[in-house]
Amino acid sequence: MENSEWLDRFQDYLIKKDLSKNTIASYSVSVRLFFRLFSELTPENAGLYRSWLVKHYSPATVNQRIYAINHFVRFVSESSEDYGLLFDGYHLNAVRVQQKSFLDSIISNEDYELLKNRLKEEENYFWYFVVRFLASTGARVSELVQIKVEHLRFGYLDLYSKGGKLRRIYFPDNLCLEAVEWCRSMGKTSGFLFLNKNGNRISARGIHQQLKYYARKYGIDPDTVYPHSFRHRFAKNFLLHFNDISLLADLMGHESIETTRIYLTRSSKEQQKLLDEIITW
Image 1 (cartoon, one colour):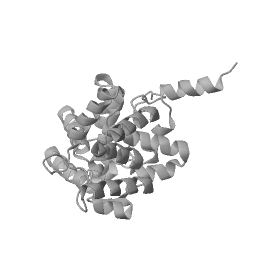
Image 2 (tube, one colour):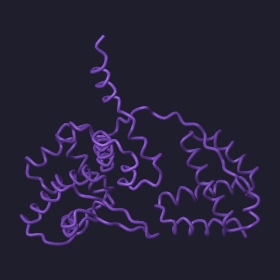
Image 3 (cartoon, rainbow, N blue to C red):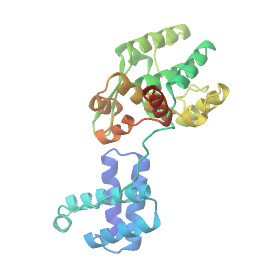
Image 4 (tube, one colour):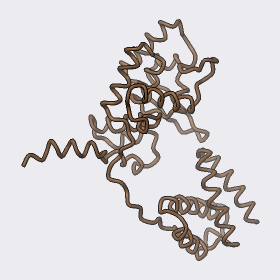
């Protein structure tokens, strides 16, 4: 089979695994790059590819490319007995990346409270609830825009991937009660919660831009105010009040608990505050 055919089949394989468009594009770029450098997929060439990547890219990018090739090797091994024998037990090792010991791009609890309270004081309930749902549920922005009035009655939103995997997003009781009252005040009894002026679901870009606007308006660092920041805040606050990382991984929809471990680290401000409290000598 030609390399181009393998790549086409690999892309179909990734689509069936319900990976995101960005991930599929990233994996495809890595495999195309490999075949521009080498005409044949062999363990030796895979090792040479890793060495080439190390010379030309940052460690983070190298690991992204290695991860993609490992997926491709796994795919061809499952698809072809010959490749299965050739790559039996083979795995390209990632390069070591020095991880930051703190997360500084997450909105602080103080700024979250400020943003939330100011929006509510100004009766800007649409954006108040955007912020509340993001920070109180850990939802991704793509999931947020799928919430309907009907879901508030159940207290959760169920989403199914193309592969049939369930992701359930729970809504706290106090948030549901507030949101139901908001809907009642608008006479809204069904349909999506977050619509734009044209009556369509608001876009992720629209949410991102408007959150930046409110950050600047209320004197909050705009670099910490973006949709995913509130998902991070949910995770940090969850571990602060209930230190169960396995449960958090389930709530966040992480396939691997290793992805969730980042939330065990502290921001530089949190480190400073902790040291100020501990060191009294």
